[in-house]
Length: 434
Image (cartoon, rainbow, N blue to C red):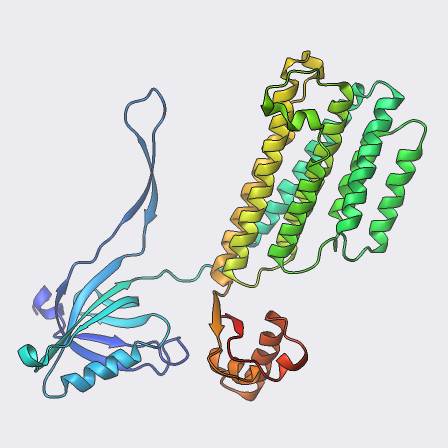
């Protein structure tokens, strides 16, 4: 029996819509004529150039999703009706099942549909150009990504404490230790002002810090450990994930304002001596900011973002805060470079690598969540509508139970209260996660 391409070639192309639920069940099937297409497969290649080296290196990162562009044809006396039915069905969301004449069954997401309606010149046939892409299966978020964030947060805390223990020799006098501990207390005061719900654990650690700073001989290592534990205390911030990261960023920037004023102005070309007290003050600020960085990272893995936009906002906010911190401490290092080696400030010393690793882990974790998160869509109401009707319509609720759940979610996700839970007004902007 012959088994050439002529035997395998199908006479037409079949297209089945995703259906009302978007999962392929209950979809509408179309059969159309087809001439051919040219699928495009694009490689993702990272090209890297190095100074003083000719050429570039290439890292093969795999294939992008294949792109397909082909034309289908509806012909015959009812081609206009079939075309309209096909275009109406394109409103369904999700990938289509395409029985390709050559490549077999494919799951393709429509991107662009261009019908060529020419009743005078080709009234017996309608051509439709369609651009598609072949999506990959959804990849669930990896729990290892969250574990990596916790691991690097712990490593940053350990590196910071090791740095403070090694720096104790710099606090040669009681007045220097007093200066450092007073700076820690100032940082604690800023944290207290930012706390929405002060719990018992927080106040207990705060009392411990007050006790340590009141001792005649200041235990710098214990004080540093207590400061980190204070900021790591759960429940410091409230609100959505992006709001919490933003609040931690503002807190950290307020602490950075306590850096020596002369060091902050170092780019003005001043060359005055960087005093020992300035060094102590800088180390106190670095300790507190490191604690805030750790707390923000732990908040990321304990508070789930509601949408892809919020995850991206949180990732960008965390990255900006870490970068701002490094820039500020770099300014101090620049200012102290004219001092003797023992009195110079080296930015973050052993904590720099741990901080960079933590930043990367946080961003990687948030990006790994993107597959499971909903896209945020803003609906502007063109008339007065009840929230229940909006929930049923926009979320395509299929049962009374689902309608109740979607209604409750709509109220919560939009922070609706008062009369808004009964009636929304024309012009109101409603967030839909779907």
